Length: 389
Figure (tube, one colour):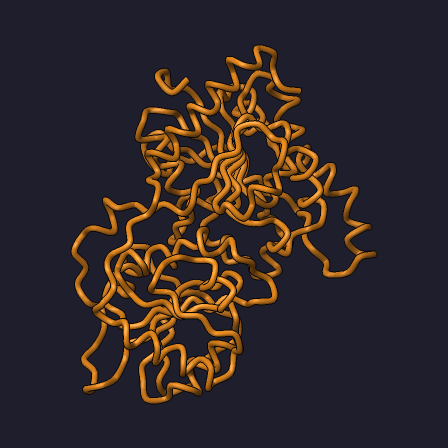
């Protein structure tokens, strides 16, 4: 299959035309680079999502609602837009009431063009989260497509509807290849065929470019602290950094809830283009990966793209102790209490590492990852001549 490119459908939570770059963006790019025709289906976007302030709505073009829009050579994208979508209501009774809708959601969301794409696909890749609800419907539409599951996140920590967690458990054995972002997730798929460990890779052709510093001049002794992203974000930890390090400059990239802009030492940059964000990463002094310890686990040591990017740029990274202890990287500095004193101490320890760390390249590349996925699918095809049900 790897020698004869065909059609790939990728079901994901991410718009390919967004400013952010998740791991699925690079996998899509790598398939397209090899000559595969890639069609992307974006889930979880609805009128309800817009009302709830889902920022992805900015990337939804009218053409994407019922058809495909070209976003790059050999990459076309469509949105499975509905009035409503399954979400975690944070209450057991409410989630139970939503469960029947979660079961029919794929049939409602897949429009005619999306169904035709699924029917003609050689490979269908599902990302962690809401895409897992579509496995049965895709298998019904196309009994010969090979199914890949890219486990980019532990679904138990995504705060999605419980039906998503149940779908992962129910469908795991149906995948021809399961690519997990952390070895800590492998036991979750015990007994499944072709489970591969693929930690976060990096687009080295992009990161290796020279980046000019975007930072303004600073007074002697003032540190440039950088926080990027909002996933699993620990807001109390951010406030502790602001309070505990008042004489240093904190730059924040990403759309955060509430505001921290009133502090005199904070500059909120909003959501930036990927390469603009890299410039801030390349020239900061200390990086912050402030994850909420209540909702993350050790897998983030391997799955966090921003930690991998910081380490490539040889930056010391202050992060929650659970994540720091799960990594062998010398540049991760952990804190166990999100107090101003604890964060100030962690930043001080990180400061001692400035200029001493080597650049850390990823253990795998996107090219190597896709090679292994396709080899895995080929082996499964040889072992199982009958189509999956």
